Each structure stands twice: as C-alpha cells, then as structure tokens.
Image 1 (cartoon, rainbow, N blue to C red):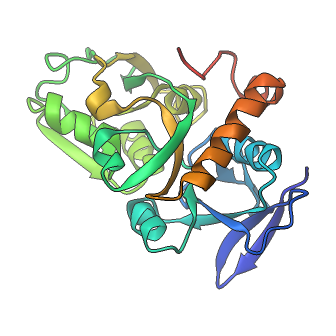
Image 2 (image 1 turned 135 degrees about the horizontal axis):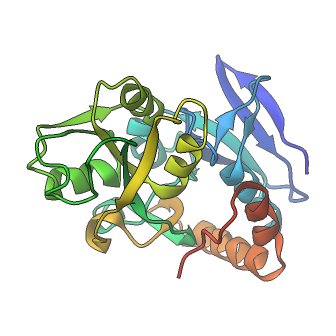
Length: 257
C-alpha cells in the first residue's frame, strides 16, 4: 500500500489508504520531530520508517481508514484528549502515569533503555557511572522521568525538545551522555553523525517508569477503537507482516518478551 503525502495548513500529513469506508478517517498522531528509524520525513517530505509502515499495516488489517497527523511531542496527549487526533502511534511507552489520562492498545514493540556516550568516556549506565556528568534526555518521555528518579547524582540533566537536538549536543561534546531507546541509539551510533559514540549499556529496568512496552494511545472510553488496534496488531503478528516489515529495518526481534 502506497503512502501519499498530504499538505494542510503547513502541516504535512500522510494518507494511509485502506479498503474501509468509514465516515471519518482516524487521525493518527505521530511526533512531528524525526525519530529514525521509527519515523522521519524523507527528502520529498513523506513520512517513512518502521512505525509508519507498522501503523499502515495495522490500519489495513483492522479495516480502518487512517491519516497520519504530525503533532508536537510535548502536546501529543493534550491533542488526543482534545480530539485534534484520534490515536497516538509515536513510540509512546505504556506507563501507569499515562494510563491515568489515556488508554493503550496491546504493545507493538518493547526495547531496552540505554545510555550512550563518547567512545573514550569512562561512563556506565548506572548512577555511579553518570555521577558528575551532564546527561541529555528528551522532554516529556519516560527517559526524562527515569533520569530524574535514578540519576540525581548527575551534574545536570539537560532536557531537549527533540532527540535529534540531544544527539547533536552529544556529538559536539556539549553533554557527556544521553539516555534513550536502544534501537534509536543503535541507529544513531551507526550513522556518520554518531560515529563518535557508543552504547555504554542498558539501565536497570523499572516498569513503573519505563513502562510495559509501546502501544497505541487512545482516549478513555474508546474501547471499540482500542480493540480494533489490538486486532490489527494480533493479525500482522500472526500473518508475518510484522516480521516482514521489521526485517527491513532491524537485525533483531524488537517485539520483546
């Protein structure tokens, strides 16, 4: 199924066409900031990546007509509750705190959280290893919450609006380390921009903060829509579509145990 870019009021959206003919398309909120390899705009402005292909497949399997709607990350939950979008598909972890405001589908992936730093740096993914260091995290993420809980001995926890900004500051030496998702960081350190750095290790897990995997966020009470997403996730896992898409981007299973 081909994804076509739409432009509306200066915001790029992407039509995910399925065979369903619903009265209103489901507006899928993604983070407007690039987050490769999960999602990012290509040279033509079309949103591409693993997560874009996965939600396309989920919508097709669920017989939903979906439209991608880029939304600023720090306002994505208010956009959902305020009905500017109908669902969130943006690598959002399922956490107890978020579940007080919105509901989630079943998980569609679950990967570890890691710390990365310059290859020469004597840094580990522990409170002791980050003591006195400047640690970068993205705003309004589980990584910010985790760092503020466990890495209080850092000289500073510097908060960025986008992951790309944090990556740039690490590469330029303005901060000592970053905490983020392992897959996103593996993609970064494999790039020319991230050649300076390496993954120093995974942080100790805390499901209460880091969550139970990544799911589709929906408004409270919209159980029918949530179950449609659940059915779509189950279907693409069963028929091989999930693995087929994943192998294009990753050399490992990212669904998690």
